[in-house]
Amino acid sequence: MQFSERISRISVSSTAAVVQKAEKLRASGTDLVDFGAGEPDFPTPERIKQAAIEALSRNLTKYTATGGIAELRRAVVERHAKDFGSAYAPEECLITVGGKQAIFEAIAATVNHGDEVILPSPYWVSFLDIINYAGGKAVILPLREEENFTLRAEDVEKLLSPKTKLIIVNSPNNPTGGVVPPEEMEKLLALARRRGVLLMSDECYCHFLYDGRKPFSLGSSGEREHLILVGSLSKTYAMTGWRVGFALGSQKLLANMLKLQSHSTSNPTSFAQWGALEALTGPQDSVRLMREEYERRRNRIVAGLRAIPGLQCTQPAGAFYVYPNAAHYLNQNGLGNVTALAEQLLEKAGVALVPGPAFGTEAHFRISYATSQERIDEGLRRLKAFFASL
Image 1 (cartoon, rainbow, N blue to C red):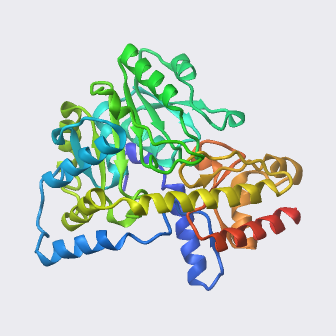
Image 2: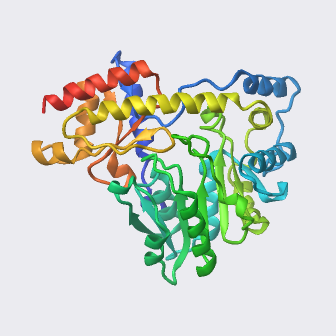
Image 3: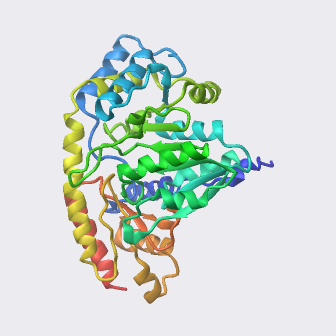
C-alpha cells in the first residue's frame, strides 16, 4: 500500500515514544525514575471527578454541540475574564479535544501550502509536525540560552516575509520553562497587527509561573483578527486524560476550525465537559497548591543539576520542565549525540527523559519535574552517578 505524501511529513511524537519505552521497562520490573512525561502527578481534584460522575448518573452521555456545551463555553470566557481581564463572548470560544486539537485546527484552517510559520526554538514537539502536515514551512527562530530562551519581537520581525502567515508563541514554554515578558508579548501582537499576520498564543501552562510572576494573557488586549489563544484544562487542573481544551478568537476563524472538528472528532466527550465546567467554576485552590509545589520542585532540581560538573541549566520561570545542556559530555566523551545519551541513561541508570532533537536543539534534554520530590532526589542521584562515570 502507498501512503499519502502528507503523512510522510510527520513522525510519532518523541515524548509519546519515551512514555512507551518507559512503560515497557516498568512492565519488566525496572525501577524507573520517569522524567519524561509532561503531565501532573497530582490526581484530578475530587470535586471535578464527582461532577463527571454526576453527569453520568444524569445520563448526559449523548452527543453535544460540536463546539462544546453552552455552559462550558460560557465558563471558559468567564474564567479567562476573571484571571486575565479579557472580554470574550461565548460565541468566540470553541471547546476542543485537548489543547492539541485547537492548535491543529487553527493551523489547518489558516496555513496553505508554502505559507511560512515563525516557530521559536526550542519548541513543543507537535508544533513542527502540525505545520509540516498542513503543508506550511516552519521558519525556525533559535532562542538564546544565555537569555533564558526569551523570545524577542525584534528577532521575530527579522524573519517575517510576504509568505509569513502565522507566529507561534508558547509561554510558559515547553520544554524550557522560559517565559515571554508581558511587554514583549504586547510587542509581538503589535507586530502581528502591523504586518497583517496571525499570532497564536499557547497558554497551556499560563497558571504555573514562579518567583512572584503574575499570569498574563494577550486576551486582555481586545484583539480578535490577529490573535488566537489556545488553552487546556489538562495541566491547570491535572486533567490530562480528560482531553478538554479550548480556543478563543474571532468567530470567523473558530467557525472554520469548527468545520474541521465536525468531520473529525465531533464534540469533546460529554461527561468530561461537565467535569471541566466544575473545574472552571469551582474553587481554584488546587491550582495554587500545585503551583507552589512545582516551584519547590523546580528549586530542588535546578540546584541538583547545577551541582553536576559539566551540566548547564537555566532557571525556568514557568511550566514544570528544565532543559539542561549536556554539550560538555557530548564533546568530551564521544557519545555522539544527546539521543544516544538519553538511551544510555534509560538503559544504564533507569532515568527516562526526552532528548533535545525532539524540540529542535542538539545538546539538551528535557526533564519534567512533575513528580514527587523523593523521585526527583533519586533521579538526581542517578544522574550524578551516571555523569561521574563518563
